[in-house]
Image (cartoon, rainbow, N blue to C red; front, top):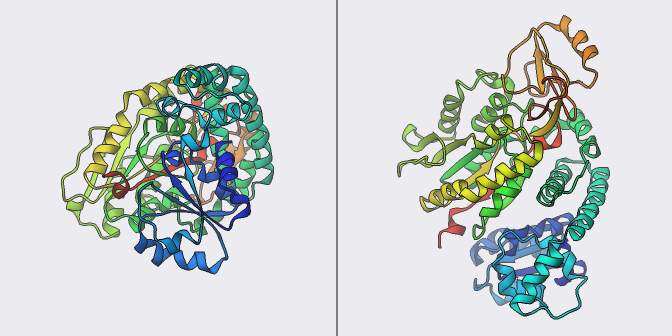
Length: 488
C-alpha cells in the first residue's frame, strides 16, 4: 500500500529512471522499494559519485533497464546524474501533507500501509499534533480499517501465489504472508491462509534441486552459499544466526531497528529444515550430503572454522560465539554469533502464533539483538542476520514409533529412514506425509516430511515446530547491514 503510494507520487509509472531522496529514512521503515522491484525496477542505493560512475552509469545510459536510485538527504549527486532521473523527495511531510509530521515520526509502531489506507479516505486538515494523534488512534488503528486491509492483502496473496514461478516470486509471497500474520495477531483478527500457499510445496518438490545454479546480487539464494556471498561482499563480516527465526519473527524484531540502514532479502533454508542440517550448511558453504555429521551439531564450530580458512582467513581472524554478549578481538574479520532465543520460544510455545507474537514482541522491546548489532557495527563489522530455518503451527497426528536415523529430538516434522521396509507402513498410517526427492541429501536414506499443519506430536496437540517444507519453514530473512552506512 505505502509502496504503491510512493510509486504513484514519484510518477514512476511513466518514467524509466527514478531518483528518490529519502528524507526520513522511509525505506528502512517500510521497504517501499519492493513495490518498485515488483514493477520491474532495479533498486540501487546511491553511495557516492565514484561507485555510481563505475557500476551504475553505464546501465542507466544503455536504457535497457528501469532503475530506482535511492539517496540520503544532503549527499552530493552531480547535476549530470540528476538529469538522467525523475527526482522526488520522499518524506512524511510530503507524502502526508494533511498530517502533522512530528506526530507521525514519533510513533515507532506505526504501520505505514495502514496509515496510507486511512489517509486516502481522509479529506480533512489534520495538521495539528492532536488531530494527527487522534487520527492514528481512531482511524489508522481502527479494527475495521485493519480488517479491510488484511482482506486486501489476502486477495493480493492469492494472486501472488497463482502467479509465482521462481524463487523471487516466492520470496515476495513469504513477505506478504508474514505481514498478514503479524497484523492479524497484533489486532486479534483470525486468518486462515496456510492452504493458500500449498503450491509452494509443489515448487520445492520440483525445483529446489535447481536452486544451487541460481546467482543473485542481493541474496545467496540458498543458505548453503551464505558464506561465499558474505565473503564476496564484505572485507570484515559477522553473521548472526537467529535459530528458528521466520519472516514473521523478523518483521516484529525489525521494529527495534529504527535508524539502522539495512537491506532486506531472503534465502532458502536447507531441507529438512532442522538445525543440525541447515545451520551447519549456512556456516560451512556445504550441502547436507557434504557435512561430516549432518544429524548432530557437534561439528558445527569446526565446519565454520574450516570454511573460513578455505576462504583465506587465518585462525586468529576467525571468531565463533554464542549469545548477545559475544565479543571479538581486533584481529577477527570473519565471525559468527549463534542466538537460540527464537527456537527456544518455538519449542516451548503453548499459544501458537499468538504466543510467538507476544514472546517475540517482548524480545524486540528488550533490545538485545539491536544492541549486539550496534556494537558490532561500531567494531567495523558488516553485520548479516539470517536464520537456519523458520517455524510453523502444527497439530499432532500421533507420535511416531519408528526405526531409522534419529535426527533432532525437538523436531517432529520429518523422519529419515534407513530401513526402507518401514516406509510403506508409515505412509499408510500418516497419509499427509510427503516423500522428499533427496535434493542435496545422502541418497541411501529415505526422507518423509509432514505436510501443512501436521507433526509427529501427541494426537491433537497444538505446537509450533519446524523440519518440513512449508513456506514459513523454508524461506528465511537475509539482512545485510553495512558498517559504512551506519557509523556516522
